[in-house]
Length: 198
Image (cartoon, rainbow, N blue to C red; front, side, top):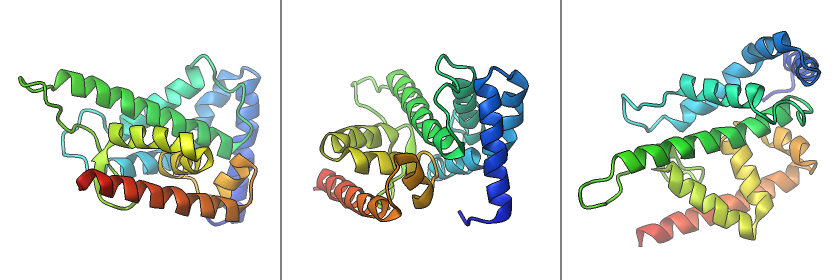
């Protein structure tokens, strides 16, 4: 995202609203949604771009579930520092909701032979086409054991729609560190996805 005055103004307004939400202001929570909605909606739409028509979880519904979980959930607002941190927490929530939805649908759609059907396809962060969201979740869990920073960068970029400068601020590292972590994690994902095809 370009660092333009309008963007900085929106970031400042978001930070002020997040502070008010932390202080228990419910009106601020409602004012916050329009400021973060478009980014979350864009990420959700990107995740579903390879999904078949008629999928039961639509991008708008996903955004509303994420928002409700964050604003009205048990751990709401206590740790939010700024817009980037809110988006980082949103990324984790979006991944959890997608995986929960895919698990529920997978359980409901087992074939009579017990075979699984692919139910929730998302664009691969490795750029290698579509893959099942549960497969991606499994891969990221394995990656996190070997490269926690790389897995978190993928999570924030893919599920949070965050730019490398935004990720750097959240992780408190340089943009170059994020760039290297992204290249490393993406290469690992490509190698492991290719390994599945062999």
